[in-house]
Every structure is written in structure tokens, then in C-alpha cells.
Amino acid sequence: MLNKGSGRALSIYAIGDLHLSFNRPVSLYDVNFETDVDKPMDIFGWERHYEQVRDRWIETVRESDTVLIPGDISWALKLNQARYDFDWIRQLPGKKVMSPGNHCYYAQSKKKVREVLPEGMEWIDADYTIVEDRVVAGTRGWNLPGDYHWDEETDRKIYERQAGRLQIALEAAVKDHPDRERIVMLHFPPVTEKSKSSLFMDLMKEYGVSLCVYGHLHGRAHRDAVEGMVDGIRLRLVSCDYIDFQPVLLELQE
Image (cartoon, rainbow, N blue to C red; front, side):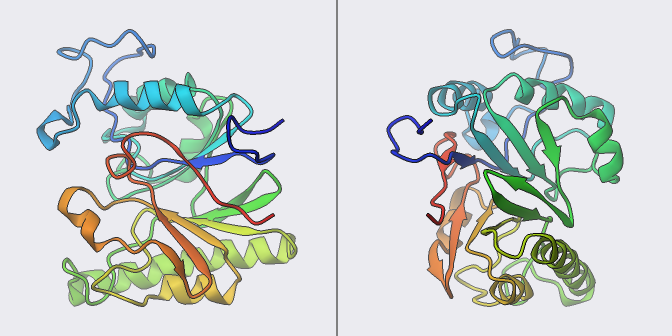
């Protein structure tokens, strides 16, 4: 079966940075903005953004499709509260593959996150899954050396650790599935206009990654995004305010 209007048999979408904050179980159309949302995003200009995500997701994604969500899914501090956001996402069409962002404080243990995820949802972090016969590997990523927010003393160790986690994921993916196309989910960008190289890009080139989706950049930071083909890897920023809250169809190898 083909995507609606795409002419493609494969159907993988991406959208990041949902930043949900429901404080009780809610359905897609049963949310009281005044009482059910702990951290409204309206202060950032994202007016009732969960409604925009809902409507555009439903217009775009079918049950047979898969949506990649690279980080900052929920503002929840505890896993028990993040479950409300996971359940809201569950009600949207399609299978979902998620990975952590810098605000996913509830995700200290991927084992525990996986234990509470609803059916049809996956969590990857320093590992991979198979989607539409493609390998999808993921981890969080981090600030890049030379970028605006880089602090050598505090960031270097985390940056190198996150690069190591991506290498673990890609090594396993290549060993297990050497002939499949490789896609990477990062939350932080692998390069920016200010930081033109990184360990993440080096690893993706080494392991033959064809496509990387990332988020994290919002508002004025959109101008720092690097997209398109870079050293043979297609880069795509999918933070939800950048893509107008609508999941984007990814360009895959034939």
C-alpha cells in the first residue's frame, strides 16, 4: 500500500520535541487546557500545540506508518507522569519509535521506560530497531564543541560518552544487518552553522548512515540548522515548531 499522495510503498515520518505535559489520562479530544496541562507551551508561541500536532498527524499518518520521535517528548520528571503523555501519543495513528532528549528526565532507565510503553511504541537509546526494512539507531547526542552553549569543562565528557553510545548502536546494527539502509535519530543536531564537524558526523560517515533526523533547535535557533546532504548524509531538522507541527515524510533510499 502506498503513502497518501507520495507514490511510496515505504512510509516513515518524523517529528520531534512534542513537549507534552498532561497530568492525567486524556483522550485526543478531551483535554481541558486550564487543568490538564502542567506546562503549556503557549508562552513560546506554540498555541495549544498538542491540538495542532493531533490534527496534522491524523491528516498525514496512517495506522500502517511509522513515526520517529527524537527526544523531548514529555516534560515529566517522573516516569509515572510521562505515561499520560505516552498514552496520548498511543492514540495517534501509526507505530512510534522514540529516543531521549535533554528534557526527558524520566528516562534514566530505558528498561523501565520500555516496561511502561503502550503497545505499538518503542524506545531506543544506544541501540537500534528495524523499521520498514531499515535500521534505525538512536541516542540523545549533546552540545557540540565550538557551538554557542559549549562549555569545555562540563560538556566534553558527556559529548564523548554520547558519541560512544551512538557507536555502540551502529556497530550492533552493522553487524546484525550489514545490507540494510541506516537511519539515525539524535535529539541534538550532529552539526550546526557554527560547529561544522562532530564525532557524531564522523561515526555516521564511518558506518554508512544515509539519513539523520534531529530536533532540539527552536525559534531563533532554527537559523543554526544544517539540512540537506552533508558528506553523503541527509540531515533533517524535525523539531515540531520548525515543521509546523506536522510529521514529515522521510526521503529513503529506493
